[in-house]
Length: 335
Length: 291
Image 1 (tube, rainbow over the protein chains, first blue to last red):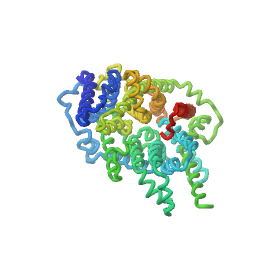
Image 2: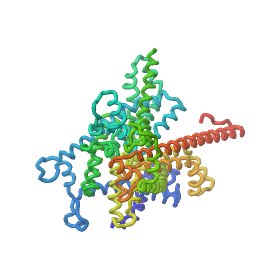
Image 3: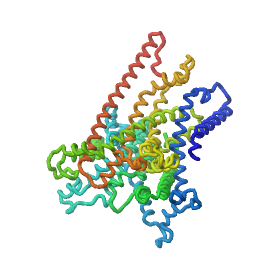
């Protein structure tokens, strides 16, 4: 059934475009304005519409919608799919909150705890990231000159083409019991036995904040770079101390960039899988690991989809609330 | 010492610290590849060896993973670059009231956690194709899943280049009798050529290093990153460090080559602008230097 609908999709998109063009013609009046098809010709129009509709519908929108729909259905053996038991249910979501039906605890303490920890730790990592990156972004935008600037950009980018697993692996080597930190601590006599950086999650937080540095620096850099340096000069001439200048002049101006960087880092950190798998302690999980286990250890894809969707919704709501608090619109971020 | 001197001292110190944080872990990992010890560590140093590189070269599972990663990367280039190009062109032409919504939709995969993109791709396409179809394979699913968000990167690259495109060129070409296709092949694509190149490189690299989406979409097969993840979780040996060192070296060479290419391109563009200005002057018209 769904396979038969597939060829209809480009037609639907073409109709939507045609309707939009008609609406525009009515609004503007048909003043020497090329329509989409006249401007591009048949072949190009087909390519443009085909590629974009494939992307938007088959890769972005429909899979997301299907995942949501899937998460509201129970897990059934193949023979019963579409049968009388295949009804919409909130069971998968209630499992996340209340646990197995009839559980004496009443709440799914384990998974809710992991969920909360993931969100809180992501906030912490995002703030840490901002603190590390702001001085660098400011330096690049206002102090560094042409040549050294280009070199810095290159130096920033290169580490990020090493894949996430190996980057996490590098931190594993650093923090292991024979790693450089423990060696130094033992040699100086600060500790008697090697510290377990994995169990205390220090290794995880260090690895996570390292993983997305670049995505914080560039939005910050773009925002600060666009600022008129005279504003800083003026503030300085009026006798503002340096921290006043940053807190009350640069940061308010760079707010969209700050919001954009923080949003990206937060979303990616909360959705990270590689670093927690490699650097997480044996007893503490990241929420994405729970999702992964539902999929590939328990093979309960419906429950996994529900957990994944819950994570996405929580992150989006959180980001929206923070943006509202800081009075930044989504449009400003997208820039 | 003046307050300004102290300040710049602190800035220098901070920069040093930052780049140590950026490169330190990678350098130490690279160095452990040469240590003759069974666990990747720098201390105690048990002698210089190239054994781990030889071990890596004979590691069949790892080589298979690299092969699959290359294959998927090429597939992603073939899918994401044309989609990104179409997405960018449509962006410049779309009915302005729909533009914000359109932009939000096509950029949303960049903000969606990769895990979720992977899950939704597998679920949807398994339903669409049927689980027993040959097309429902790790390769195809991974290419689709990765192309979902890599197309958005490509689109952003094309958009920034298209912003510098002069619409007058399009009108001139069409007025002189070029068909839409001729305009596309002979005017627009040559103008976008550097962007096509950048988009292809970026698409390949993002595909090659992706883990979160791939681990869900690769199904029964492995790519380099999923193979690595399995190894690292099992405990590890320095041949992983050797691999990381190779990747860093290749990336560094690639980045330097790209930088050289870009500088040459910039210089050529500047030269072309200078020639055009000189020609305009020779015809007795004032060159529009300010424009």
